[in-house]
Length: 365
Image (cartoon, rainbow, N blue to C red; front, top):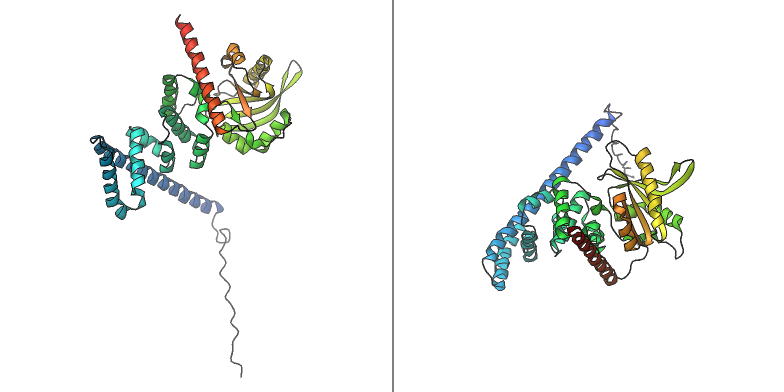
């Protein structure tokens, strides 16, 4: 006699949809939003508390170390502190991390600045920042990271790409540059010198050896996310080949962007050749037209960027382009070896500072 029984698997209970239960669809969405935003706030607060704790520990150890000039003594103090703290509180208090904390307190001595930055920068961000030797460069990356909300990965890419050395602020006297960074820290006020750079790295466009302006334009739109990462996250794309009509004659602007923090339209012209004096007049016309017909209440005057394959520094200097709200920058579709790039940027910085010093000297005379 066959006594086996057929067992029928129970079907899992289906989850009732909000509509079937009479629940408004918006209710569940709102509740999820409340939970997620609360989690984000908690995570931000925990990160800020941890970062401030690390600074306080580093500052406290540093005070003891400053009282003793012997390097070996300092190492023994850190070793002893780590041996006592790590078993109870975990790897965050290892010997290497304690040295990071001491370095943190050394290069960021003001607790108020640490408190402000820690609300948006993680400990991993600070780990990358504290070993930048130049204080001006370190402040630049810290503030831009805060303002543009860079991830750690983006911060590292910006440092590797020598963003600071490519900005106009790096070419200014240190006290002037520091004043702009202080203004950014205190008022969240960006200036064009912090936004625009030279050169721009467009190696991600994958252009063929022979290409025209339309190829560059199309490649930028195809790789818009990478382009915005290079030019800055506050840029918003508005349009391409913007038609501008003056006296029944049509002109076409290559690319039009809007910069949210500057609250200005940004007109970009692409040039295959070196910068020419005539390029200024063309872009000036576009800017005046945008100012008259496209500028909205509350916005600043439109500004322009000419991206060219090469530029003549003397042309740019004599034409006083910045008075017209125009910047000129070189673009690189293939990156040179890093040591060559560093040498080129270093020479450009020295030349720019020499010109500024000469201009200041003439004004004094």
